[in-house]
Image (cartoon, one colour):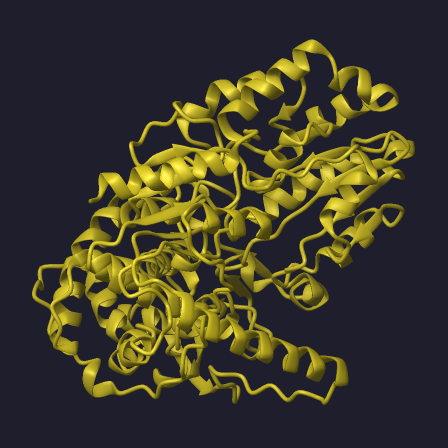
Amino acid sequence: MKLLVTTALEETWGNGQDILFLGEWCKLYGRKETWESKTHETIKYNWDDREKLYSDAKYLEELYEKLLVELSEQLNKIHNVNYSKLYWRVLIGIWLGYFIQILLQRWQSIDNATHNSNDIETIILNQDDESMVPQNMINFIDLCCGDLWNHYLFGKIIKFKKNIKYKTVSSPNKSNVETIKYKFNLKVKIKNIIFTFIKKVNYFISLTFTKNTELFFVTTYLPLLDEIMLNLRFNQIPKIINSQNVPYCIVDNSIREWNWTENNNSDFEQFLKIMIPIQMPTIYLEGFTKFNKYLQKSTWPKLPKLIFTSNSHIYDDFVKFWIAQKVEKGTPLVIGQHGGGPLHKLNFQTDHELAICNGYLFPGSNGNTWNDKIFGVGQFFRRKWKYSLKGGGLLIEFTVPRYFYSISSTVQSDDFIKYLSDQKKFVANLPSEIRKNFTIRLSQSDQSWDMKKRWNTYFPEVSIDNGNIPIYKLFKQSKLIVCTYAATTYNQTLAANAPTIIFWDENYNQMHDIATPYFDALKKVGIFHTSPESAAKQITNIWNDIETWWNSEEVQDARNFYCNKYAYIPDNLLDNIEDSLRKVIEKTK
């Protein structure tokens, strides 16, 4: 009989049995000697099959919309309010979407294990429900990326399905809410005093000069000077917007016992309806009434003409509560695209943003979008730099959480092993004299992949940056930048006209269909590649004269063609933003 291991928690690995690892997330690189010494196999990631991913995404979208209606009714009843579905979409929508997707991925992983072998057993830690309830959205993200919470979730699924034998053992004594002890630090103390003083001054300014109907800007991702100037264009005094900490709430099981209106569900949906009230963050249940009263003391505008943010609508529950209240009263919401470049073919977060906003500020030029909510205003980040012909190459790496948590047609969870394999192939295919002139820039968030240790093992001769040096400083020191994932960085380097090579596996990074001709143009001139070998070959060919290749007419034409669509740097960014905001205000009157 094989032992099913669901996470990297080694107290559940048994003693001497053949192991069936549920995913690559179980096998920490830093513990390689331990798991390699055991007879084991690893279950294939359920959404490695991209057709299945898209099929399941469609099902999840329909399920999400159905549950959002039911949850809106349920929460209105619990809190004795009568808010619209839009209110609840703004407040709990991103959590609900993530949670449904997470649960299906974990459910299918257990299905895959039972399909692999009928003769398996597992060890489940004894964890109580209350200790695993997230406090708020940020706490939820922290939990769902960790081993203890995922072990809890897998255990709940196994107990519900009743098709895998298990034994229960005591759980590590770990609390959901960590207690951190701080040592006295004079510099930190002085900074805190200064920060507290600034907050008090800002509070006074907000209390004295805030108009109840002014526009509200929070976490816009605009440079500070631009945000100040944008405020002045609307004849309002610029302010520092400080969010607030969300208070800790004790779980009250009496308000988590729900009667759902619809009972004709699949096994998965039945389980989901059991878990939603158990797992909903306390801020949306136990803390809801108290927090709404707390918001009434806020110095923020009572009836803002418009709200503009690029990030706070996802993870900041204080701001989300406030936005939900204002949107409910008719205030339009404008969201700036977080990052840049084309949208992914599949991305729940973007779908959520387009569903809750009245306007979406896009980093391309105007007049080439497919949704009437989208305004092409240009890149918020407009830094340019002169690359160094005496510098070396810069390979930009990234990481993802070991555990999946959000639907997207990008590298997720176990896909990262394939990503790492391609990175190794790329560096291995560079001639040694070029390889020695490369720096590998790691993500500051390692996500327990042990990236530095891996690279030091793979290629000890290559320089490693842990993510501590400011990225723009590294850009200036490099003569060529290599981008390896479908996100912000390559849009910034292309917009800045810095020599750039891009490569990724299109099976794991799929962009929106309308982006195809633009990537085809980049591919034709050797900027974009779909294999590590092709990218390494291109670099080998141009290394000794990168500038001639980069400044050639065909390369610059392709770069401009792409940047005009997705990484546009306008001369009049604030004009574009102001015009877009005014259009949204006028449209929603």
